[in-house]
Image 1: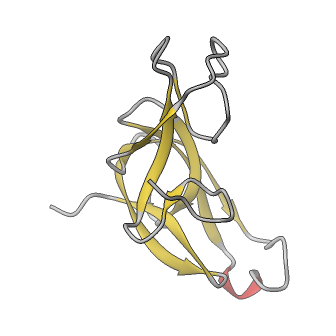
Image 2 (image 1 turned 135 degrees about the vertical axis):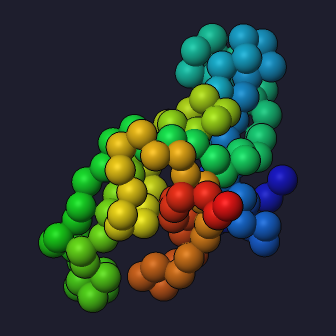
Length: 122
């Protein structure tokens, strides 16, 4: 599975979130590494997440960190506990609340394609 050059964890071309799993101890994690952070095994495998989870925490960004992102402020950043068991930070729809079930979709933001969590469509 190919991932983008910026090492973001998204999968090129299919708009999916990638994570890693250890074959030795079954530990899972989000940020790519050459080895398992739990047991040190050197052969982690790449997996694709469902994109589903629950909002763990959130913060509204009123002052963008760069001039390029200033037109997008304010925007919501959320911490999501994914159904696969890892926690990740991403953008979120403004009306989300802690505890909401969410699903990722990909949007253009600041010239990049990024995941943004929102309530699942029914």
